[in-house]
Amino acid sequence: MFPETFETDRLRFERLRRDAVDAREFYEVSSRRNSTIAEETRYLPWNPTATVKEAADRLEEFERQWADRERAEWIVRPKEGEDGAGEIAGTAGLLCRWEKDLGVPAIWLRKPFWGRGYSGERADALLEIAFDRLDFGVVAVPLHADNEKSYRAVEKYVERHGGRYEGLLRNHAGRYDDPADHHRFSISREEYESSD
Image (tube, rainbow, N blue to C red; front, side, top):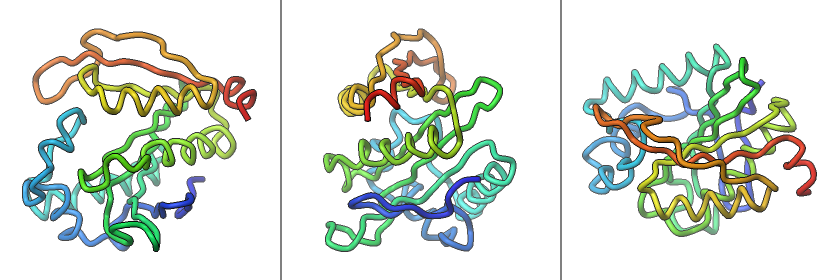
């Protein structure tokens, strides 16, 4: 159902699972051993991994969600010719809300890979998967209200694909124990197809 691997002009995506990414390698980039992890996850709904076992458990959970068709998660690596080629640049995901005919893309990029336009490149690929392969009617992008840099990036690719800003949802999500406001953008199948 989900592609195991795919590529964009500058990035390679491969299914995030234990036989593709070693738990220790995943731990090194997703834990406090990564000196920029607090900044990278500031607006994300997950905590850095605390142990190698927790990293392995997270990989195992991604495998379960993939098998249950709840979520597809890929490791993101820059391709040859890019600075940091072959390194883990982060992850990209697509949450499947089948009962709502809704796809929800996700991304975590490590700080050394910020500012390169990778988020938009990843979004273009995930939108193609969501609409052309999985046949969703709508893709929605929730965004922490304080995340100004990502707001501009999301706004650009949503506009490029004919979508729109829907508004601010108050106390829509949480980080740890605190409620958080979310901006919501969306693109319908009709908008996406009309923008090509």
